Image (cartoon, rainbow, N blue to C red; front, side, top):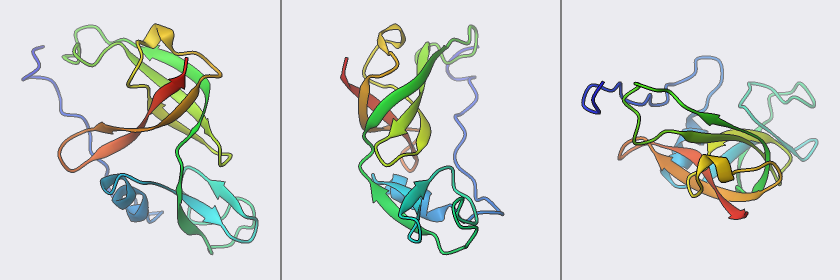
Length: 141
């Protein structure tokens, strides 16, 4: 499959159960916003309609630094996918300094150089001119 025939990368869609517009607006503004429970002073991710800690709906969206540590990593290879220019791809679970885990790609290292315990900082993986997903750059190899 040629690059012209490759399926486009999906863009985010509205969620009918949880209002995620603040998260996606943050990505458009180059900011990582996560839900925050003011009663317990704790972040949560992925977005939910209620606090994991209190069961209440009094959540806020707050900007976070986007720094953390690689908690888990894997290498994605999909031969014949038409994505050869993007693969192999390093996908990581990052334990953010705010105490939540988030998935993302590592953009600045070859996949076999990414390891558990490395420090990372927020980067952005552009899908198109309007949409970017949170991603990471390793800052401590």
